[in-house]
Image (cartoon, rainbow, N blue to C red; front, side):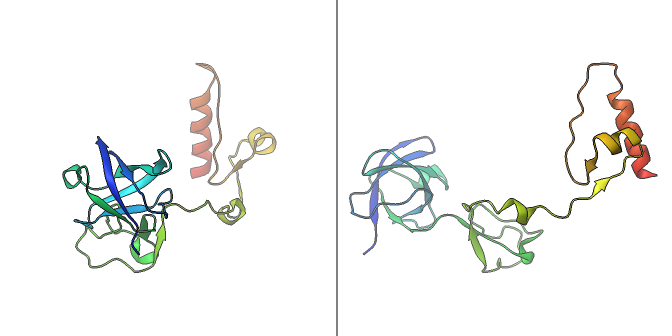
Length: 168
């Protein structure tokens, strides 16, 4: 049995949907209009036990009060993999560059972050050529460094010297 609801109110891009069925949509589920499956909503918050606030992901002209919506039971997904690099797609993962269909391997845009140890690569010290910095405050390649100081203390001069030493 499909999980139906209906549009209760529309305020800008926020659309309130009411689900009277026992099975309610989850946060981030995509809802499709029954009359136009290309018109999609994304559930972002529950307003009460039967009501849900949704974000319109399609033009607002598609939505009207009383329209029936169907819960897809899935969140937004996009194609992933090497074949996606350099391609242009819309928010639903549909190709917009005329280079043919996107790869079938898709993942949800709502995933937990990877473990930090899986993301960090090998850390290598960047030799600046300035001994006091290399010894007391070494910089990591690809990392970030804050350089604080008032006006006229030599921040720009120091950065220029570091860049000069790294390039040569």
